[in-house]
Image 1 (cartoon, rainbow, N blue to C red):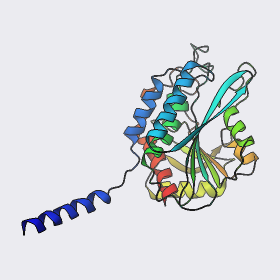
Image 2 (cartoon, rainbow, N blue to C red):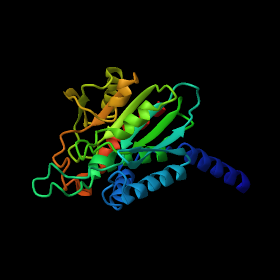
Image 3 (cartoon, rainbow, N blue to C red):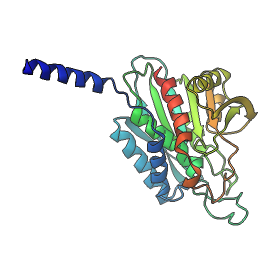
Image 4 (spheres, rainbow, N blue to C red):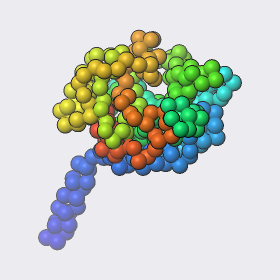
Amino acid sequence: MRSLCVILLFAQFSCSTSSQETIFEGQSALLFVEEQMAFGPRIPGSEESRKTAGWVVEQLESFGWETEVQHFSYLGTPLMNIIAKSEGVSESKPILIGAHYDTRPYADRDPIHPEAPVPGANDGASGVAVLIELAHVLDRDRLRQPVWLVFFDAEDSGNIDGWDWIVGSSFFADNLTQVLEAAVIVDMVGDRDLQLYIEKNSDPNLVQEIWELADQLGYPAFINTPKYSMIDDHSPFLRIGVPAVDIIDFDYLYWHTIDDTVDKVSAYSLEQVGRTLEHWLEN
């Protein structure tokens, strides 16, 4: 009888632990923001940028993702895009989830220190944190199609020393050798007062899927109203015919200032975006 009880207890324990799912945690994503901020401003071509790229690769590989680095240069500056891939259970086209990891060299909207670098807690680190936490929690056995997590360099140096915007994502899109199902960009998604209005250039079908899912999950940050039209890392994908959406809160008081710091970022804001994408990708 004692042996039977032990067997039953073991079976019960096994069932309970196997049924547990890892879900996106905002606090975990916030720690990833803090770890990026410890490197300092991630200006393209800088040592801080290289260290951040190495850290991103290390995190992705620790979670079992196949990772590669795309090296290229722009105006004589060496740059890197980072790509992590999960194959999924079908041979369908990949879905790309992307964010930029660079920060703006000058805080040109700061009224006091316009020549200081932008720290980039929300504008840079928040999107990266969402992608890394997704790499941690996504159940790749439930992904019906391949998923790529892509970290773009040199998004945010436009109009400085002859640089254009969205350099990394433009290079990536121009050199694609595989057709994508869709591209979803997350940018500035950590604001404590997160308001994710619909970016007007974004693919309406993707918008409907993601915003309706967020509403079903009870996340108030997703506001089903168009507001802004902008150039961001989704733009190169739209240009080559890939359906793309930009998840962004552009009403951010500290945008391109030296006050874009960790205290402006909310774990709950990161969680709303991350859990919505987790459910969208898995279900």
